[in-house]
Amino acid sequence: MNWPMILAHGALGSWDEVIFLSIVAIFFIIMAVAWVRSRAMQGDDSITPVDTPSEAAADDTDRFTLD
Image 1: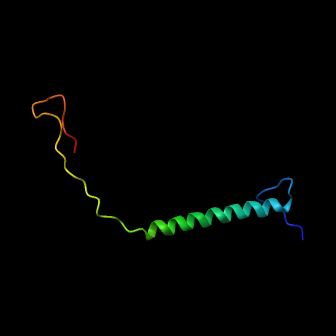
Image 2: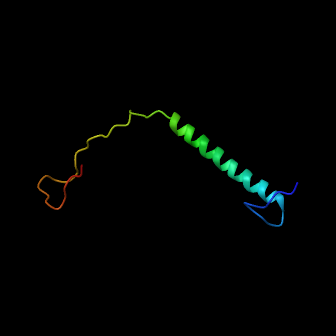
Image 3: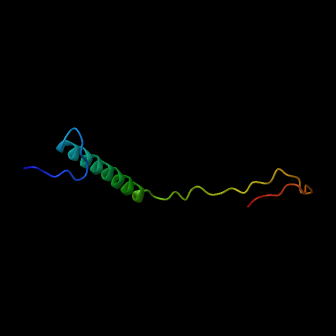
């Protein structure tokens, strides 16, 4: 059976198609695993911002605190 060259063509003949499709399959598998792992991660609410006093003096007009 002679398959038409659709996706890739080169010196390897039909094996180019197999290699190209296997790379595409591996990419989608890696992306699916990464997506599933990111969806399964629980949000860590233990990290909270800490209010620290500014090092600038109160009467210094050139500096101001950021929120």
